[in-house]
Amino acid sequence: MKVKLWGTRGSIPSPGPETIRYGGNTSCVGVTLSDGSLLALDAGTGIRSLGLALAAEPARLHILLTHLHLDHIQGLVFFAPAFRPQTEIVIWGPAAPEASLRDRIARYISAPLSPVEVRELPCDVSFRHCPEAEWEIGSARIRAASVAHRGPTLGYRIDDGASSLAYIPDHEPALGADIDALEEEWISGFGLAQGASLLIHDGQYADAEYPDHVGWGHSSLSHALSFARRSGAERTVLFHHDPMHSDERLDRLAEEARSGWAALGGTEGAIGIGAERAEYELSAPAAGMVPAS
Amino acid sequence: MPQKPLELILARNLMSALSTPAFLVDEGGVLVFYNEAAGALLGKRFEELGTVGADEWGSLFGPFGDDGEPIPYDELPLVVAVRNGRPAHAEFEISSADGARHRVEVSAFPILTAHGSQGAIAVFWPRASRNGAAA
Picture 1 (cartoon, one colour):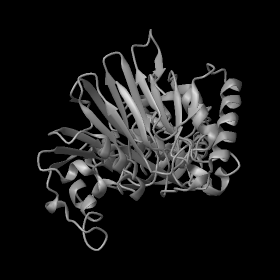
Picture 2 (cartoon, each protein chain N blue to C red; picture 1 turned 180 degrees about the vertical axis):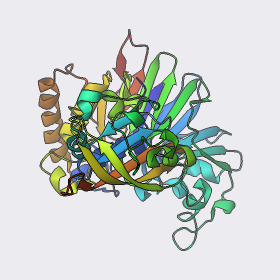
Picture 3 (cartoon, chains in turn yellow, cyan; picture 1 turned 180 degrees about the horizontal axis):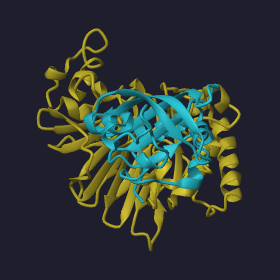
């Protein structure tokens, strides 16, 4: 399984000279399964670049949305494969009591917010609510579970052979709870992340910033580290960077993450800050995970 | 042990912060948590008791009707909420670990999600103890 980060930013795109290294595009992760199947995790503005990188040949791909906040769907109408008649796109996402996934996404892909309507997309697009039980896409088994954020929000677990990816980009597992004291079964997202080869997890706020953002649905650095450590993930990439965090700020957070991780007894090199275009190749646990760049 | 549904996790986190006695059962009716305020009322902290099966917790602390007889399990608000998926309310007496009786009002409501019922919550409002003092 190959993983590439196409958008690592949270909340709002933040391009500019101060975000060149970690990137300014919002959440999107490309995944190529061992059988060649293609997944896009979220469709923030990063999915535009993913679409441009895909060959213009007929393709079937799956977009797995964690939730429908704009920073996770904004790139949908700028995703080139959606404008190719030969492309089949299956969009998965959380169910909600008020309206179907298609109808909720159509609130964005419709006038006056969008120049096109869902029904006008040339591709063959379908919308599916994620089932409660595990399902298969290509060579992978996919599991979705609700996680602590604002509104219906999922995290994903993708198991492909012996390697596994957990993707929980918007997550506040310590909301109203002491994450270090909770039993594992009572920690939001734990079942998705447990023992994953790679965990991509919310790390939006520095510890000093978190008290002003309790309940906003995101993690402090310390909470993200505790969650990662308790989950036993082999490697963790912090993600969904705050738009106010420049490259220099993220460099400092990376250093804080490394020292905090070491204090928790974590393996050296197993924690990092996600950077746009970074690639990871997940192999069997015995061989470990190979950062491709 | 499998992870609890998010709705139960959030319910527990909320209940932990409340001074109102509150109880939480899962979709199978198993008592999976009660908060410190409930522990004070019952005379036993949840950590001391632990998870209690659906057919056991109903008789641990009574409850007793006005005639002093135990209230049938099926009629307890929490059981009605989790089994029938609707809110329920009742007033009765419970017996704490030290044998004291407490009169309480109880409101229970189901936790319904996109995937169906995940359990139920009950909040207890202490009315007065048997000697007439506020509990």
